Picture (spheres, rainbow, N blue to C red):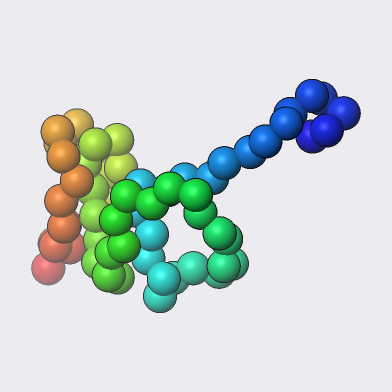
Length: 63
């Protein structure tokens, strides 16, 4: 990165689920810590649906 002239780099995540994290990545900015549930909306999709919801919601799988 230094060769490309990058002087600094910051990391951020809107949602973080510590139970599912494969790596412990230090974040400079974090929106929310969440539990292990299915989420969809605001461009997050589940089963190719719910992407157009205006906010993030918990999704219950179809029985």
